[in-house]
View 1 (cartoon, rainbow, N blue to C red):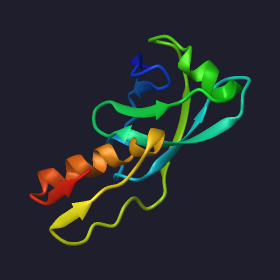
View 2: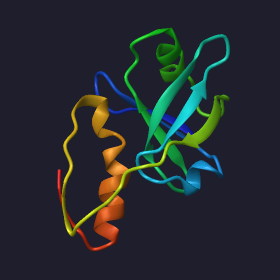
View 3: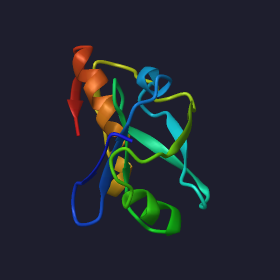
Length: 119
């Protein structure tokens, strides 16, 4: 794990290096396993050299995940899913809470391709 940053009073962003995740498509997800806890599905909130998940600690696994420190190990499987399907030149993205996290890489991809984005 590269870093754990507290984004707000209720969310953390956890960045890590993973070759497969560096090639993921917006909307894909990974399975994160914290030793001694269950595996959790998490949407990617950043895609690139460093991948990231944005987490709200709501159970034992996510609480332990958010308490991890730089350099500690988490296990990642994936990415899974097909990702978002993009149509048209103008796109409206709607999300709330941690559900907005997977829309960030989508918005970046749309802007890079010259499409109009309203979030």
